[in-house]
Length: 418
Image 1 (cartoon, rainbow, N blue to C red):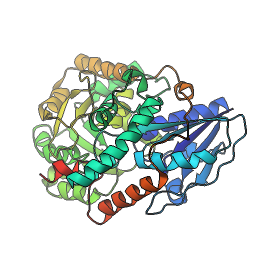
Image 2: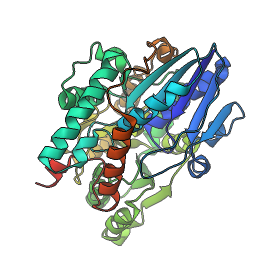
Image 3: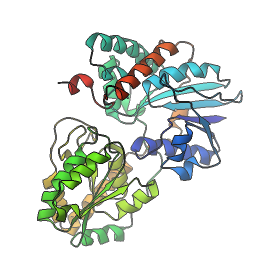
Image 4: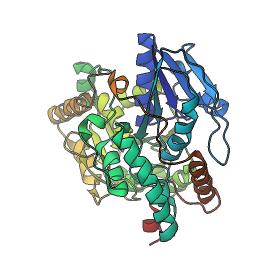
């Protein structure tokens, strides 16, 4: 019997959560056992409650401590094959030891890397001290090499795997096959919907951006708000919809307060939206501007979608999703305001063509085999090179740096301190 275990308490807005939810839904449809390791707090705030509240989803609650999560006791049948998805290296190191007590047939424990920078993904990079940082890196390098060697290292993008290769000195074989993609086919919007949108741009041109207010990681959003003043001055039909929430909400509101009143009146903060609400909002817009998962959400709705740069406070990016090979980067881009204005000024046929290309780009990201994670090798739980005590000690120090020293978990502290 197959069993999917999601070891990620938080299910908010994001491409990572969307893919995990798709896997969860697929397993429910197939009659597999589904377990979500969460907390009562995170259960209530799930953005996918229509799925996470389903009776088929077993919710088992973690206890959060400064030294990492305390895992609940899980019971399995002797013939169950469990696949576990964990997105944090230190959580992986901790839970790897917990799984030794699971009485099931096999366990495949996958580290699914969610990003390419910062202590949340590469734990040693939250440190500024070269000696201590290097000591952490060597310990975690042994763990990363072990995970890769067992075939259990997965990324949500090629750039995630490349970051691990560079940081930990590994060489991931067949990287293309180690990228976890969406699994459900897409329904293309009807031709008449795209044609209607092409014509409606003359009256109101709706720009949408969707991201957690997590800065500097998603700092492009503040750059877009600043740039909207000039866009609106030249194109008074422009509107901006900002979908999101998070710790940086005050920064978003401060940026909006600096806009001239005419432009500010055309910006709407929607707050968080459910996946269904987000799709409805996307279908009412004409252009999507964003990073990572939100780019694909727009492209799935046949929205021309502009790929923005990570870790910048400028309105800077790389081009349309269907023209850009690598959609996740923090390397220098270019000012995308002229690109936004080109979409506003496109004739209808060019807009329709770009819309269709965006949808086709999203369609190309679908993984044809939803059983992918169940075909990966079982994990030998007895040979892991990092002890649970070491992992919990690192977890505590990382938490201390984040909370007390206000270290961002999504940027390299050596670079941040320069």
